[in-house]
Image (tube, rainbow, N blue to C red):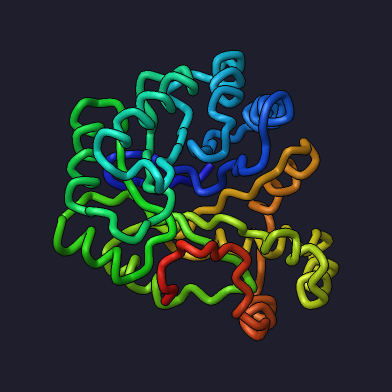
Length: 272
């Protein structure tokens, strides 16, 4: 699996998203993905599935050194003491001494960025997370974190797919060598039924979803974490890596409307 080197860690380009998967369903999905060869598992405190993922990792037999695990602190726990408690809880549930990447899940109005990143850096200095990063940060927030606080951000995880233009934030991230980790890479299922993507898929004998995923993974500096609980879907996402899109395909995809954002809670920042 191709991977980025970012802030001292190896980040596989294709990972398994686990939002809205819990309990035995989540454990079985992670066990299945690890069996297929996935080595990048994405979770979060808010998903309430870290314990299931910890159990799956423990039973998988995959050497810890081969595995990348990302988890995230929820935006209600951004004060330093609360962040410390949340981090300790996440490690305990995951049954890990160290995670590979610890992210701020969402920014929040009134948050104190200097103290937040001071605490994140402590976790890194303690050797309990190999790298730190953010999710759902806009350009203004990234500028503060990267240019003022000089925080060593390993990624920004944001919604990105064929139906949403993220060129402005990606351009800034590229200028700072910060990888983009795309969540909702299949547009919450919308990609699977899009007529343009279906036609491209028919041409290559693949699904529309595989076309949408490969379009992302063909881009410099982009990783993707599609959620997939079924083994067949996990395999299909894996097989998308073998697809070769041509210039005509990319031109058609570029012509699709790019204004569909599926994830924008009330506490979201002003999007770029």
